[in-house]
Image (cartoon, rainbow, N blue to C red; front, top):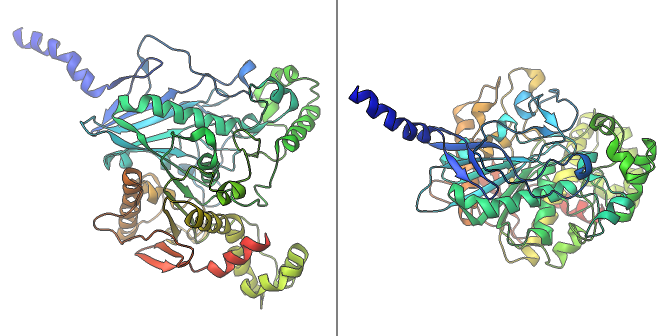
Length: 506
């Protein structure tokens, strides 16, 4: 009986050891503890953006008194149901359920608290600003937390729910702008981190934002926005940037975006903002909003990225950026003759210069050049220009990489090389989350090294550390980068002459 009584007395402490509780500024939350890592999922950082809050800046979450259980991901932002395609298997996609407008949640992986506050990494997913969510398997934060940082992943609104501009929306805004709600969601999440992360053992003065694809485009906008001053202290951009207008991210200003919104409302038969808000989420989702994504609004994005960096008005913070060998966004290649004609139509007087770099002597050569041009136009030139301007105008260092590791394929049909997003499981040491790929010792070593570079950078603003190949900061004079492959090597940027040309003629 005495033993039973002692066990009953100890039970709360035993439960507490497995059920970490943290008090946030809105109320207490509980999570789970697994292998020494405390995990909290589905923490609300803003009110649900539904009803009259649809297409408004995120509003502070309403406080609660009782302990809120945070052990499962919140809903992913409303979007089409995810279906695996090409190289992007299930691990790269959000769960099919739940998907909802009520999506403003974040997740925290933290080592047990110690006397030393931990540096923080905040991850922003990709998906073309039309899809994505923090619940993808490859975004799990456990392995990064094991390396003694706090890892946070956040949701934000996508598609027309995250980017609709309209004159009526601008009129009701305190800042007379509308449209960049997804970026404002990210800012709200970063404010939550600043106000709450110390309760998890984190250091709010050492917060690095990281993102891939659209997430990297977003990192660029956040690094340039005055709204993030004091909220971010480092940036990692994987395969993305917004320095130059591009075919997937053309230049747009508030007035243009508002007119796109007017057209969208008319297409739905809506004559007022209230009519639009009365539409169901599915009616909005299945309408065609046209181009969606961040744009220059004079508030969230005061000026173009190019002008911001040229005038050294960005948040001058240490940065890592890079792109993948097979970062190709294209359909089937066309024959050499057609490729040459297309280049001449698109680039006019500069066509011959371009064809000297992207050769088309035969169909095979033209096919290879089309892949390289797709990669360089979409991702390479953004990173090259961003790195050049930061090294020239900024004070903080910038580090550039090329990820060249061709992911092992289970079948020839699944061989996409070093494909877009392929680096993510390596960067966050999550190869164990990826199925049906025969990873080798070299892959696991690269994942360990790459994630250690990332962790070192989050902790100190410098990726270097013991046991790693020394990674020099990028300088426009030397153009040295880190080549991440079965072995890590420092080389001069192999595509420098191509990217220098593209940066001038685009």
